[in-house]
Image 1 (tube, rainbow, N blue to C red):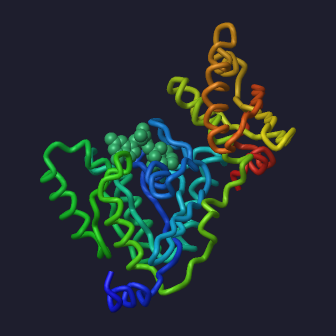
Image 2: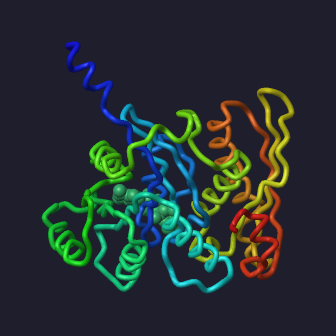
Length: 306
Ligand SMILES: Nc1nc2c(ncn2[C@@H]2O[C@H](COP(=O)(O)OP(=O)(O)OP(=O)(O)O)[C@@H](O)[C@H]2O)c(=O)[nH]1
Ligand SMILES: [Mg+2]
């Protein structure tokens, strides 16, 4: 590198700030968060309403830092759980420098999309539009009417087609995003990837494995809390998680015939937790019936859904 160029690179101002990710359920918000952070910090599933609270991920680049705030998918609240999820979206929108509306570009526009767009407008924050799942579109020109529609409705700092799953256009997205953030030094240390505790991450991993191994009826009625976390040795952690469901019949589904399903959930979750910890662990799962937990304040608080 010649000296003049090296100097100009050094002098490039650093941009840092908070970026809120909002969108309908299943748009790929958490997939994008994990992809950008480079580590699995948010549960992902093909079932809607996977994310239940705000999850922060830190992305550090030579020219700045993005603190990405993942939020629950926007939906009509039915229970106290869902009201809290939507309050988390509103809170996130208030506290960020830039809003990213993420949209599944492979599905047609519905009322939910208008509702999310209104939230972005009401936030009165600079905003970007991310058209995700572009890998699903064989004919990329299909994006054009969508881009036109969103452009007519709102002023965007940028419109970026991406694939969060494959990592397409991610570097371009990062640079577009950094340009929209205020001039500032990094807000967090480079190794501080998330605001989530290991206990919370472990509980979310278990919940993700439940969503992976069960059908449509279970996701909404399941919550997981890490009740015990014991660092037995430097290289061995003992973890107890409680899985809450609302009815005895749901408990039976999660446990499965001969406890096969619970074993499978435990095995898959333990493998992932160990990757995160970098050492062995013992994961014990308990299934507990708590009728109406989705309406009960103290249980929701305990679950970290505040
Ligand atoms: N083909 C394809 N699938 C994707 C892409 N991004 C996410 N998905 C899938 O879409 C589904 C939903 O992804 P999530 O990241 O959980 O979506 P979310 O927006 O966080 O959903 P909620 O938390 O429920 O609001 C998962 O099955 C992902 O694998 C993408 O770029 N391409
Ligand atoms: Mg999510």
